[in-house]
Image (cartoon, rainbow, N blue to C red):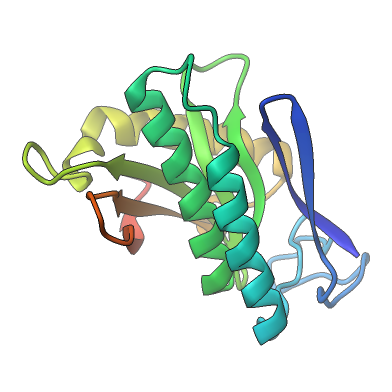
Length: 191
């Protein structure tokens, strides 16, 4: 058993464990990164695990605080939860959520492994397409901030820059519809 995520919602601490993980400590990949830093990804997600993740996703989205948070912050938190479960279904192993550095402002929404690549995932959630698109919110200033935070994370994790990439998840929560989720792998580079 390996814990893959810890979420705090309204004072509750929820720990998600991956029982189907393979690999062990001491094994290294072609980049020399130890398995404890680079968790192995299960070969496939079983139907039972997928059904359980879907149920858990619906249950957790109902727990999100609706009062006391600004509407845009609640939308962002709901989007991060939906992105978390979407990425898990895509085969990512999420290792950090809302990671912050004490030196640089900002945060990394989600950090996870897909195969042997560490992915820094920026989540953008919108309730409508009327104004600007969600992708437009990841402008050059935001990219610069994400690159700076990602370099700090890589330094602490001892992972080379070449083994990492930036992904963007856009989510539209429109009235009376299922959320529309799009994943853009390798959305932008290091320069």
